Amino acid sequence: MTTLSTARFTLIETEFQVALDTFAHEVAAGLCAAPKTLPCRHFYDRRGSELFEAICQLPEYYLTRAESEILAVHATEIAALFDEPVALIELGSGSAVKTQLLIEALLEHQRELLFAPIDISQSALEESARELLDCYEELEVIGAAAPYEVGLAHLQREVAGPQLVLWLGSSVGNFEPDAAVSFLSEVADALDGEADRLLIGMDLHKDRAVLERAYDDAQGITAAFNLNLLGRINRELGGRFDLNRFAHRAVYDEERGRVEMHLVSRAAQTVPIDELDLEIDFAEGETIHSENSHKYRLEDIPNLLGEAGFELERQFFDSKRRFSLNLARPLRYSNPL
Ligand code: AVJ
Image 1 (cartoon, rainbow, N blue to C red):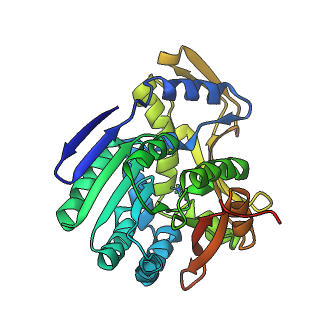
Image 2: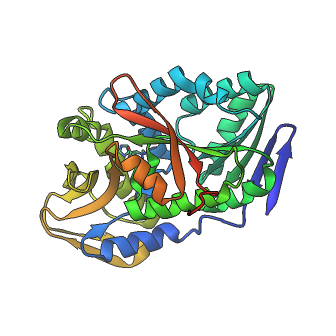
């Protein structure tokens, strides 16, 4: 582990390095599987991250606006729930605008703040840290460029005292329910103080048309975001995907409570991926499943958190009740009998 440090910024580089061939391995495995899949975390190369920022501004993509509204209205109230100063640990970077609302409220309440973001992208971490440090003199940043689990373990050693773990954007929705429970259980295990809390954004089940439009916008930005996965394979792995021969599809599976995104082959075709030494056959209409975004019913939320070892303590909604922000405490000391 190395640390790069300037006055108020420390970057923890963990032993974790995105193995150069992780992407290659996962692409090969996913495209050789039946049905074909690609893991959604590979959306976020430079181009994909830009497209995601654009998605957050779309009129159809209500999630970001709803969550920002909740924080704008309730951040002060949330900060005031803590009697002692807390350190703010953030999973994934989300839009800095949303985090900033909470950072400001905490600084107001406790004067100083340690902000500890965990993000897989070192450049994203450094950029947002620099901007925040320019804005707030009483802020200290310790960042970890790592996957969530690895970063949490490292930060645990750096952060003393009460912690607030922030996981915005309904990113938990990318996990299958079982995987969400097991990851959140790890978070619960990492939170061992009485005052420690989790603040997690979770998108709510709603009308199919609203959900499907949020993931298939009129300007085609989400389509470009989805198709960029194939573009990335072309750029990084010598793929020969013709992006015009694939279509974007977003469907709400009501039973499973999730929006699925797929890339649909418009024709029967064979696509070489030179650096993987592979040729992938597609039937007309065959799809690559590229993302799940789970939507939660109100009663699901305490259940899911409960299975992970958390008790739902407070819930905040936007004015149209499209999105929820949930404050939960680890149930460490629950006493059977
Ligand atoms: C960043 C995972 C929360 O699932 O809504 C946006 C990603 N995909 N449009 C989501 C996404 C298509 C987003 N998350």
